[in-house]
Image (cartoon, rainbow, N blue to C red; front, side, top):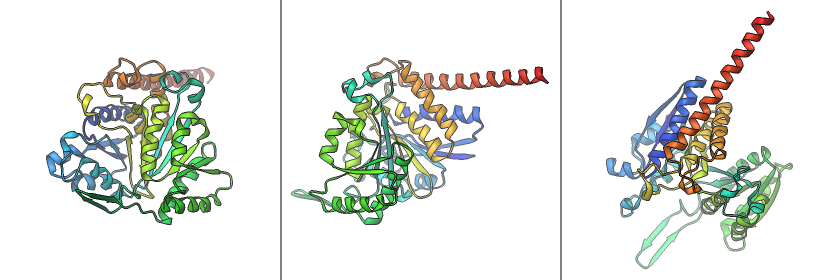
Amino acid sequence: MSHIVVLPGDGIGPEVTAEARQCLELLSDRCGLGLTFEERDFGGIAIDRHGVPLPAETLDACKGADAILAGAVGGPQWDECEQRPEAGLLQLRARLGLFANLRPSRVLRGLEHLSPLKKHICTGADVLVVRELTGGAYFGEKHYRDDYASDLCVYTRDEIERIAHVAFAAARKRRKKVTSVDKANVLATSRLWRHTLEQVAGSYPDVALDHLYVDAAAMALVTHPRRFDVIVTENMFGDIMSDELSVVGGSIGLLPSASIGESGPGLFEPIHGSAPDIAGQDLANPAAAIASAAMLLDLGLGLAEPAALLADSLEATLRGGCWTTDLHGKARCSELGDDVRERLASQFTAREAHNELIAMNRGCCG
């Protein structure tokens, strides 16, 4: 039995998380996973109903969960609030100790034409961005006046070491290369970052490490994405670079993420925003939310086989040409979700037929 807290969020968040939840419910029923679900207010909708973006009851529910599935938050109607919806997300990450954000992106074979990059550039691209999530300028001391503003960027050696270990461990399961992205020619925090990465690398002699300044890395992502395996970087750089990386695969609507800590529940969410201009119209791409649900099963609950079934079904849906408007298709959000679930169900039907055939053959041989 595993309990999942669902934070639908704002804009298209409720639509895409609903499709992902239905996939998890189907898997739970067919695989006997015993998943239970609880929805809580979060973001702008929580401001409207509770006055704050992260109500105490939502935080308590998240602390008691086995994993958290979230949608995007925010929208123009909350821009002038004392606490904006995004503040709730930062608070949740900090309170749960979710210091590592994993953002995978790859170009699916046969779907290279979805990328705006030339085929010979994007083919075979498969990159994991490991973003430090609870430090840097996003969490630093802030000052704002009409004629002056500042955001303090601070990193400690311990913060850098723990995210470095996550990146090197991930690289060991992939192609054994880590690229550390910084701005060490200008920023003191980046100099500490680079020095610390070099020290941690000594514990991983089987993994290669190189360094790139963030501006050079941003250029390389769209000119030679195959040079990268695992990218590890600080909070703001990781936020920007992973959004840039989404272009390589064709749409930000495809990219999932996992935010994890040393213990406790992980947070799984698409990297895209709330897209209020298309909210409620069944036009959003739920692929990133569904892929986030697959990461939830794998990294959050340790259920690798059901996670693979869901990821394979999503990939088959995309290969089959079921594309939403961001991919220049005509499918609705609900239609893409239905297609994934139909492919999931067909996998179970095929397995059941195979098992029945094996049982019949054993009976005949007996």
